[in-house]
Image 1 (cartoon, rainbow, N blue to C red):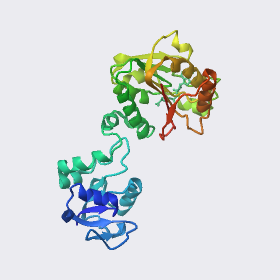
Image 2: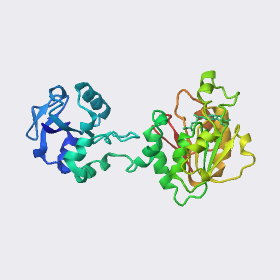
Image 3: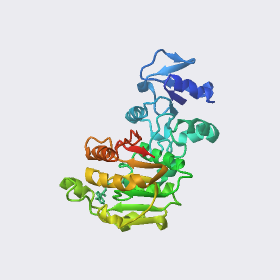
Image 4: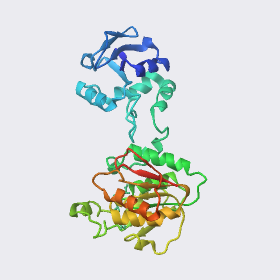
Length: 315
Ligand SMILES: C[S@@+](CC[C@H](N)C(=O)[O-])C[C@H]1O[C@@H](n2cnc3c(N)ncnc32)[C@H](O)[C@@H]1O
């Protein structure tokens, strides 16, 4: 059967417009077809596709997860699936699609794919994602970090993270800002006993150490670790910052972090307030409110739709 195209809407017609000749398409596939034919080719229901006959299935709709699930149920292997839209994952789900390379060729494939990504170079970050963190990280958070770091050109100052845990996010900061000093603050023994963390939450954050964090940094020579409970761990540090990640989950330390870092953030810099939108960690948003009251003005910020609902505070 050769090449099949999933979808009979704008995405499918764009694909033809971008250079896949219609003669090469055997059939279109659509769960809710509006007719038997599209652009003169037959339209099949997914169940009518014979997996062995279809050499490459190009998915042009935005419902990538649902289509992938359906294809798995129908017995169509991942090597035959090429997703043109909604591929916003850390690891590129098209990497395994060997059929696309063979049947379309590098040139056509190169023309089709990059247009569908939010960030054209997420591979740089995806490469840096360690297997054990795959589940705990999210594309929006890391792709936003990459874009923000591009905006920091010309802004002076160091980078910092308060709340490092195993260093997964810190690793990405170190990768994206290789020339900057990166300060990492963590107790390496969980939360302050006064913070209000449950026993389980404490236990979940216990398994880390300075050596483990440094071992995964791509540029450890530029990393300064400040172990101990914040703000005591500052030990009088005076610095200016271009980028700060504040990720300590509870109100008191978040407020301490804002009090220290916000006045020291350079103009043009960003402070990422992780979990600001998280319903299970309301102390983060409360701390920001309290800090804004203290300084007598609201801080401009852009909320992200990442997993924690990060608020990007902008100076
Ligand atoms: C959610 S984890 C950080 C996760 C990390 N930012 C990431 O994205 O991979 C929160 C961390 O904050 C640290 N922490 C909380 N309160 C602290 C305090 N007062 N001083 C130092 N570290 C603290 C905990 O030890 C824990 O490792």
